[in-house]
Image (cartoon, rainbow, N blue to C red; front, top):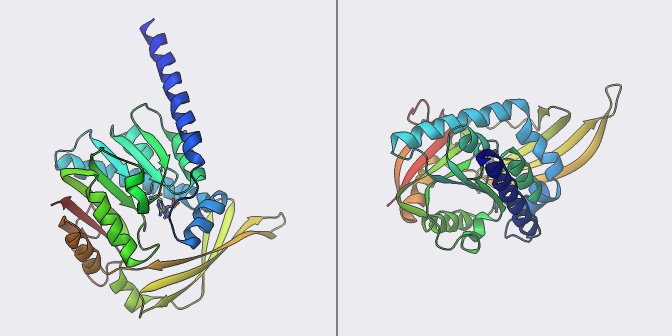
Length: 293
Ligand SMILES: C[S@@+](CC[C@H](N)C(=O)[O-])C[C@H]1O[C@@H](n2cnc3c(N)ncnc32)[C@H](O)[C@@H]1O
């Protein structure tokens, strides 16, 4: 009997969540750069394939494991974690379902948020549409034990946008709470090794994405043009959509500096949370861990 009641409460709660999300999903007018809206919102059905490729899902589970181990070592064992931006929930879902955290996932893209919600297997966690540039519009009194920002998820707008995000995020993290950025492309590596050959190739399951990039060393921005192709039988490819991006690539010291001036104490700048190796110009991607100062 108790089980039946629990199931009923579970169903009602998930219907509530879905209703909440449905009204929340209408809020597509979030502050963001034009290209981010085009790629992540208007073309989410294409971009989702990149996050949902098999390797990326397994990577999400591994990242969730690293993060939970790290947080536990700082005394945050089953706390509440803000995953911003959460995308399709490839990290939020295992962090919540497998590692027991209460996760709030926020992302600009209604389609990606819905995919994240579909992966949620418990009643503690929730997913909502919102922008990193408008945290005040999402939360009022709430304070998280930790916040995470995974897989090159800053640098989409201006440096000022990222500084504002760090500053505002600080208001929603508890005293001594942790902020993990996991991971960003290292500008120092890119300066020495940027591959000028125009076209890269990524096979995301049924979808093929061609990407050509340029790196402007003066502005430290990588501009990319992407073409998404689906298969059209007999080895043919059908162009499904095009999208561009324009991202600020940071050196580790720049991210550490921005965090420091916005009220965070930088604890680690490392290659990843598992090996915790110090970064060098040969480190391709880096993670930063900061504590609310
Ligand atoms: C590279 S994906 C990473 C997603 C997720 N962290 C992961 O590792 O799978 C970047 C995400 O940022 C989201 N995004 C872009 N601009 C945003 C903004 N201003 N506010 C919130 N989310 C944003 C996109 O919708 C996309 O899901």
